[in-house]
Amino acid sequence: MLYYKFQNYEEFKNMFGIIKHGNGVCSRKNKILLAYVKDKRLLHEAVEKNDYTLLHISSMAELKKTVTRRIIISGHSNNSLRYVLELDGDFFYSRNLETDNLKGLCEDGDTKAIRYINHKNGEKVFKMKAGKLYRSIIQETEFGRTLPEQVVTYLCEEFSADWQVYTHSKLPKNTLHVDKDFEKIYSSDWCKGDFSSCMTDKDYYYFYMDSVNASAAYLTDEEDMVIARCIIYNEVKDQDGNKWRLAERQYASDENDILKRALIDALIKGGYIDGYKKVGAGAGDAREFVDLEENSLSDRKFRIECDLDHDDPLSYQDSFKWYDECNRIADNYGHGDIGLDVTDGSINGEEEEEEEYDDFHDYHCQATRVVYYHGQEYYCDVENLEDFTWVDRLEEYHHDSDVLQCPECKANFLKEDKCDSEITDEDYCCEECREKAEETYKKANWYYSDYDEEYYEYAEDITTYQVWNNILCEYEEKNISVESGNRLLARGELHELNGIFYNRIDEETGLPYTYEMNEMTV
Image: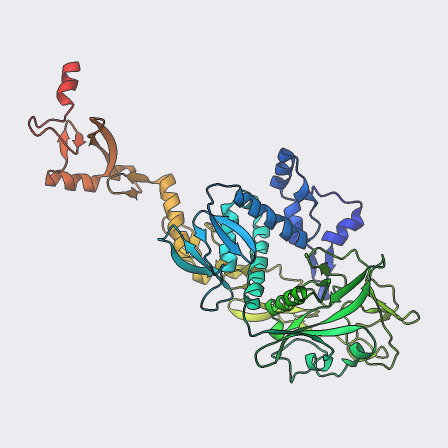
């Protein structure tokens, strides 16, 4: 049952409706958020604590921000989590893990991993993939353990991407530019790698110079090559007359989302924008803008001034693609009657077929990303990833048939990397998880030998013996393996009387210390 309240069905469709793609393929919007608000435990917690905040989350950005804050609070309130991990300005809490003065940054320059101290392992310094470490942080908190797996996976993916943005920002090699050099950001001579942009080398960039108030925003590497770019519209108005500076859809070398996030992060820190197109949004997501706190702006009707005639150069428009020629306005909500989402350079032409191709499902689409099926690389529609699972340690999508979930840490991993256990009869992502799971299983199902400090599978492998306590002056019953008991008995280090084993006896009488006293009592 869904506990979120909607005004009407249209509001529900706007948030969670089905999107139809080419060739009849469909997917649901905000699927992870829907799974979260449908969670029965969420309602139970809300009623029990009379706090319905988590039931009223209306966007993925709000879900990420609100849940992350709750994880931090939950960790802080748990006194057993006494170590602090300072990561990208936030403070998380752990039972054994802690960051040092480098605050998680790896000395070897690894931007995908976090450096930490493990107090359980001799206070040694280790590093771990950001998403995997974040999952362990979540699972250590009482609140985190109540989260649905889809939400945990989403949070780990987001944290991993944010961490790479943060670590990239600490590297001196990338430089931010905000200027009017539109020619540079649309030239293959200056753009490093494949930007998957159909406007490259088309000379349609004059549109941004002549028809609209815009700036070119881009990152360059140490060789002055463009590695990420976007357009900033410097004067955008909403339905209330408020003015915004909005960054359009981002493009990057080989469609690297981390570089896109790094560009946005640099623009925010530089004070150049008030909002931006959500990282990863497709060409058709005209209203997927967020503010600097990642709050959705989809309810805002944005428009820009646009002085465009039929023969003027036109660069393909992702968002402001409805043009009102009479009033010289372009908007992102469908008021204008001339489409600017065309690829042939002017509004005189007709829209061309979509450039990107999903070679896994065999159809054209707006945007794709790399996925793997049985080890083979494919390009898949970003809106049709239902058959694929994110593998955090690889930071890749793999087909569901190739992926397992670790029953211990809940991380996804490839079947070919599994560590199988003959004890639990399950498959694990690593030796550490396998050993931990086997230990838990043995505690619950096997028999422990105090003497051997080991577990034994069968009860007949264990027996008892009496251990003399010098302080209490009495025997205590302990467990010992039959094998060890027989070995000690043969050495004379264990003594048997009436079928009972003793580790020490009275050397003068050859009897247990309390034997005579017991006989007298009888």
